[in-house]
Image: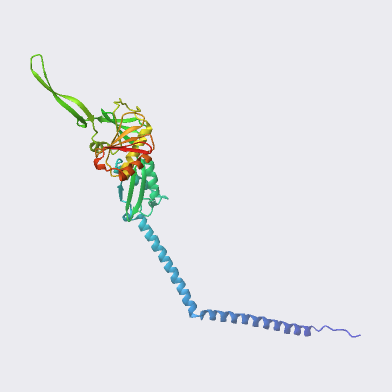
Length: 341
């Protein structure tokens, strides 16, 4: 038999050749990868000029946007914090009874605070006109109100006051009356010049045979001085009650429905006609009343009946039937019928 003899020199040479081939392969792969990375880096360093232009443009846009944001922020701060845009003037139209300073102070009280603790509430751009409107309607008797801003620092307010008071005249004193018909304040006594008197001269002889001449009042009529009352007490409806009632604070002298009717007539005539309203004369407590105009003629009305329908009859009569120049009275107390003279 033939024995296999292990030749270690032969295997050593064989393994050496295999190791050399593997080393050469690995080295060649590393070199290829290195060349590829080098080629890639070179390619990037030599990339398309248009790509570089786009990168530059992007940076320019970012800078421009940043400048724009900073500019807008600066303008916002200028608008909010500059005194030029701070509300300084309040123009009010329609006041008759309420003091202008009361409205003005209330408006500045509403806007004089910081919103979110840092933004000035009096800035033109932050003033909330609806908020001002709501608060003024809560604090004052207003029928309607419009609030608008006028650039750069003015508020314009147009309002109509709600009548919650009337003037009561019992022939001796003037008082303020609330809408329930109760006396809330006694103002002053009636002046002697507010009476029209018819007199005659009477001559008598005394016990000594001496003649004595004196003026005797035959008739006297009270006529409230409307112009003077309005200047002194405000433009309110005036009740002249001929029943000679005694008054004291909180005493009820007129039914609330009659007060409400008087206010409605006052508003209808003043807002919808050019008739100069005088005063309302009452002789009883069942709603009958006489509305005296400053033109010398008068209306006979029912204060406790719907005022609107009576007023519509008045408008139609004045437009279609009669002339105010020669008018004595118009009687509107009977629904569907109108009488005049």
